[in-house]
Image (cartoon, rainbow, N blue to C red; front, side, top):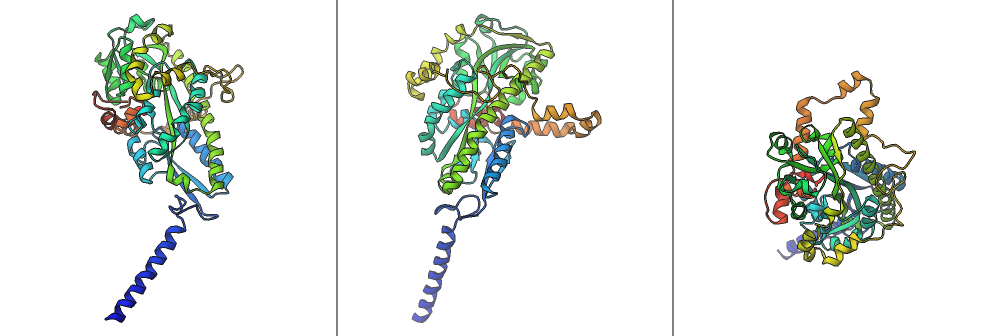
Length: 436
């Protein structure tokens, strides 16, 4: 009996030694929980995005994947998953914490449910122009790194998700007086709702996939969106008045699983940081160009475009600022953003301070539009997806959990109508609203 027990003990000890050796050797995709990845091992990074495959963030992510593979000699493999393929934005954020997803760019509105102080960037009229936005993101925005790490995230940078303006069904917006009492659909973000309310409008959270019909039927007087969504979703057909007031800038943090990052070799960390440093300005360049491109198409459609004086709108924002000050680091944190000196910030190549291509440069058409314009008519028809497929894709993009909606923040990057706590709102908002 004693001999049999000793044999069993020796066998268990052997199995334990093998198990410990396997754990310390590292795994493809994580670098191993016990330390750096072995030399020459292929490390896989799943990069989750909520945007359609043709949008600027995904285009930039694909270029990032190519550069990572090239600079690492194939030992860093980035797999790009657009259209919420790995789950809603809230699911993906939790996936970073659970080490099932390595990289993501969730809407800031959704992430603010995990880090309350990041509601700072959900407040209205913080920025004067794109140069102001990018300068703040690269400085003050990166100061959230410690808070992100406390939640298990490595903050790599910030994507631009567009300047948001106001569309109306029948009444053009020429001044602040024109929006008083109008029911304006906003993302289900407490900060976004507070911002629209301080202008005198009646903020009305609503599911993104109900927006078109609600505008068409008169349930809503208007809504807010970036030019890309306003055009692509054809909201201009039912709300042909477009007030370029730039009331809110939508931004997405680019995150990595902190444990995954820490387990990368020093060489891989250096390559990652170099490639991210190229990806961030590239995404901003692509998005700025896409906004100008779609604004030109809107002008061609003959919609009524107005440019209200922003000063009277900005003068109202102190109400929202005071309401959220305690949650975002005090009034000094808000004032640091509003009064930030961005004069020396260098913009992405070819883009001016206002986000418009500099003289001599043209706004590039988004990938899918460029392809459609160059393809022969019959090819374009052949490539066109069946109506039911397009509808399915749109539904999938807009029916993500509310937190994603909260991401557009209000996708609550957009969503349902309720005033529940941020985290609850996030869970109920459609996913696409983060990028709506």
